[in-house]
Image (cartoon, rainbow, N blue to C red; front, side, top):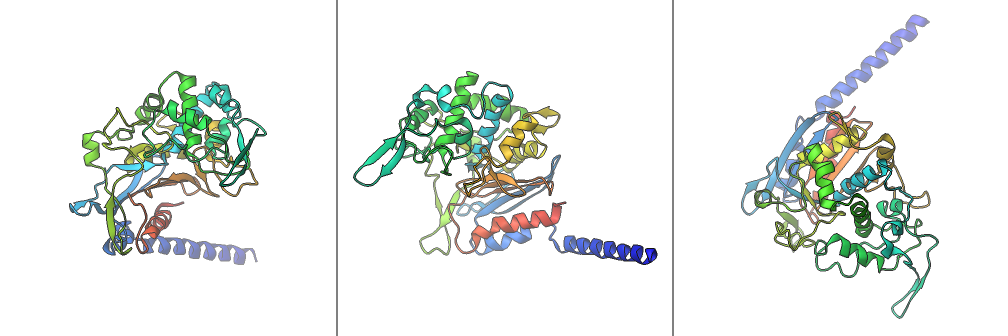
Length: 385
């Protein structure tokens, strides 16, 4: 009987191993074969698709064009506006100050920014009146980093672009804006919240937000192409942005209409913590590798285990449908973030991989929006544990 059981176990293991080998054998060697059909159908302008593990880049594939009209093929080092992927990087910097005991997540924002004292919440609103009342508690750092503070997406004066105000001025305008919902009860995706946390970082550290990011995160990690102000050489590598044309069957170029031009202008463009960064697939992968390593990279620890856990696990209350950490979206087996022009970074600890999806799209014709998922599925089949 024992021999039968042992033989059956060996047979099952053999079949399972064969199935895994066959599954891997059926997976294309390169993501290009998965993604090129979207380019051929004019549903995707171009992409840089990168897969990494904790220690190395496993693959970098490029398809399509950085500039369709100019017939410029998408290079591996193309620059992209990563937009809201900036949120996780900003939250990482804030958590460094939590690690140092200089701020605490459940501190009220008004402890560091007195202009928030007395902020009210909307109790009733229609086209004829707004009734305000005092909220149950002042908004906290944890709440502004997880989109449950009640702050709006932006304030009324952040027009026509999101990068046209100095951080201090933008955050002061949030303090003058009533909360839309009771703090801690509703998810309201909020650039204002992330920007507010970054302003606290400035006040506590005594450094400009952008300098703190450069000195404490980008330089030490070696993220040489991650910046709020791409220089002329980096702008030349910037992939153009596309969206569906009038017929909805092709692609039309358009500008980054949420930002101020020229992008190199340091006098009239200001760093936007919630969405102002430009980067490359390789730079973004470095940041993600640090997270996949639990807050450590190449022997240097950037976040304590507790700070890393808070950043990458659900912070939104159980009664709220959306699952969000601190500056990062959180799924059942992944965490990461996307950007306004369809860029994406995803860290999958159980699979041991990172996927970086770099495109510049304000929407897709046809099945173009499915390209990202096709790439991620390929990456998991090819490199997942």
